Amino acid sequence: MFTRTANITTDRASTYLQQLCKHFAHKIEVQFDPQSGHIAFPFGQCDLVAQDATLTLTATANNQADLTKTTRVIASHLERFAFRENPEINWQPLTAG
Image (cartoon, rainbow, N blue to C red; front, side):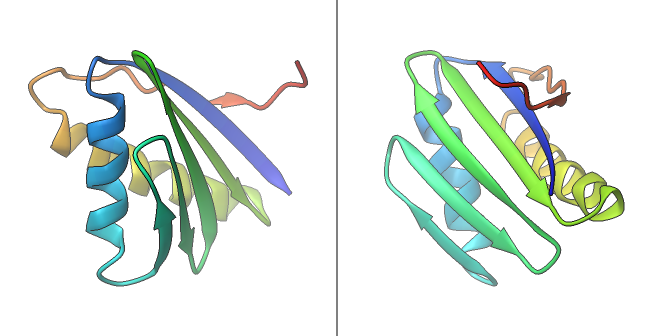
């Protein structure tokens, strides 16, 4: 499995989590509540956690190409929803910690 994570600082973490999940729920399997979410794309998945002023995104896929696609889809939609904040989305390899 290939995994990348991104932490976005925003006072609207829960709002964006729910907005992303509701958007994708029209076409694919999604589970969410105000603090956490899971989006299952055909090519990968993304887990979302809203805690205080941080939205954490964790993308996982079976290969690098699908991981790239997963991160691009999530990032492009978040950038659209959060255009007023112009969020900085820097995907990093997931490290144990």
